[in-house]
Image (tube, rainbow, N blue to C red; front, side, top):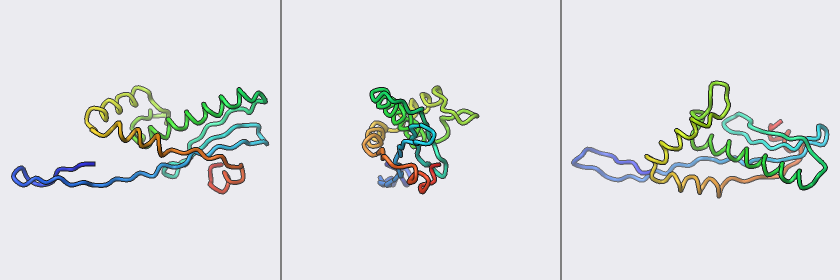
Length: 138
């Protein structure tokens, strides 16, 4: 991020580095309940989604893809906009997301670079249910 310091007569450019920790999105199959589960922890809160496990392999792969895409989008919104993009019930408000992204696109000159960097950094990791307990995701 670039910040301008000083008065009009004596202005200098200062480069300030910012860093954001992007958590992994963990995925596992719960054999006891028959669910496909994906979750991540963001600022002390657990965000997740699950689907019923089906025997059809093609359908199961589509469900995994949808789980991953949905949680990646949620994590993207949390990283770039925080809870400003959520409604009073804690759900993502599409209109607020569009408003926030329009503001960022207009005023943040490196917005596209931030989105590209996020997409490169976010990782999915397959774990077991026991590992999910250890990570406090359940």
